[in-house]
Length: 381
Ligand SMILES: *[C@@H]1O[C@H](CO)[C@@H](O)[C@H](O)[C@H]1NC(C)=O
Ligand SMILES: *[C@@H]1O[C@H](CO)[C@@H](O)[C@H](O)[C@H]1NC(C)=O
Ligand SMILES: *[C@@H]1O[C@H](CO)[C@@H](O)[C@H](O)[C@H]1NC(C)=O
Ligand SMILES: *[C@@H]1O[C@H](CO)[C@@H](O)[C@H](O)[C@H]1NC(C)=O
Ligand SMILES: *[C@@H]1O[C@H](CO)[C@@H](O)[C@H](O)[C@H]1NC(C)=O
Image (cartoon, rainbow, N blue to C red; front, side, top):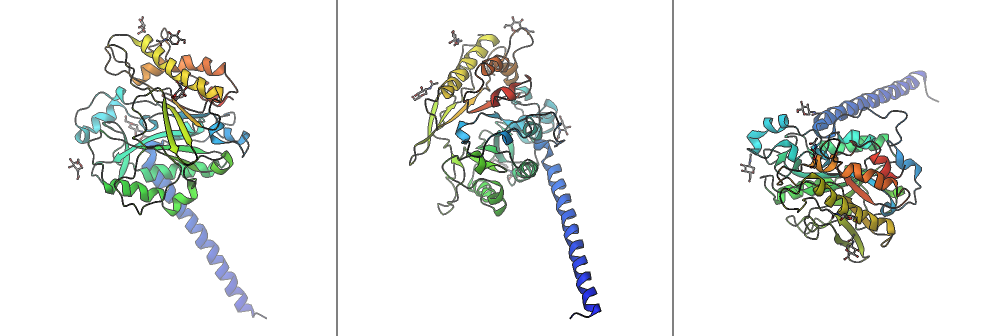
């Protein structure tokens, strides 16, 4: 039998252990808050969801057995550009030098957290070195989006959102952004490889390689769409997750890409990525928008027919014709020029609503929530 002092000693040890645990929990909470603040220029702030929002946890309604390739997944094109203003560009001129105006690069208006709470489940992120060629950050072509925010910080934000929304699945398309004036070297590839192969990543990223599985397997996790290659790092670095959409097979500016991402199981991504409208100079907003609308709807139409029922469809509704006079910037293509010429998004909304219940696949949007009801129409809510 234990003597009285021995019992109190055990009780004291237990008490201290509880205290140590709660101190650790406080420390972890503060460390996360600190990291999220560093990530805020790209993540924004998670203010949570309103009770009435049906987009916050919309995947809850779908069964675990649902294949991802059968789902309608709203995404954002160049997701990280949401806060890229002329003021931001001007403040970063010392790194970028003079580049075209901010409106040519900006494709979104609301933050990554707002996108997540608003139902967006596919993100198009483009990385390259931050100034100093040491940490990895986010760019859109020559535009540097946030000079000190890192890929790691932004991933922490996504992990923390998933912890709060365990029924949801997020797809992350990562692309090496060229044209930034920063080096594309082995150190950069090793850095991103190390992030994707870390023990933390093994908890938060779907580990299957070469195919997309079911919603049940993807819930509470990120699924990787790898749009860059590991061609500069040693061949011994073999850890691969998600699907590899090889950049050399992704035909630039094409309305119909057939990209085989698994030659053994014959897994194909059918992609519409016609982003730079090729009309003659001066054709005008309305005709540029009509061309893009045609390319996008032709592709989504094919997804609805179930011609290839178990293959992945990705349709980009985003576009520009920046060199036109006057320019069609991304916002003009997406939203038109005011009230009299509708943009791709206004035209797409009734088109999708008329096909409610059909398979659309992934639809990547610019200015995803500027036309109310757009995300719901993609999902089919
Ligand atoms: C967005 O950019 C503005 C500058 O245009 C800046 O003041 C603001 O802090 C940025 N927002 C975030 C969340 O970083
Ligand atoms: C980063 O790389 C660029 C392009 O190679 C180079 O011009 C610049 O000097 C480098 N910066 C640093 C801090 O090494
Ligand atoms: C777009 O498609 C519609 C319907 O198929 C067709 O009538 C129209 O000529 C097309 N317009 C352009 C600009 O391609
Ligand atoms: C895209 O190309 C494939 C292969 O050539 C073809 O089967 C399909 O019908 C095309 N889709 C569209 C929308 O043009
Ligand atoms: C929008 O574009 C149309 C067609 O190019 C033009 O007729 C109209 O004046 C423009 N409206 C505005 C508000 O710019």
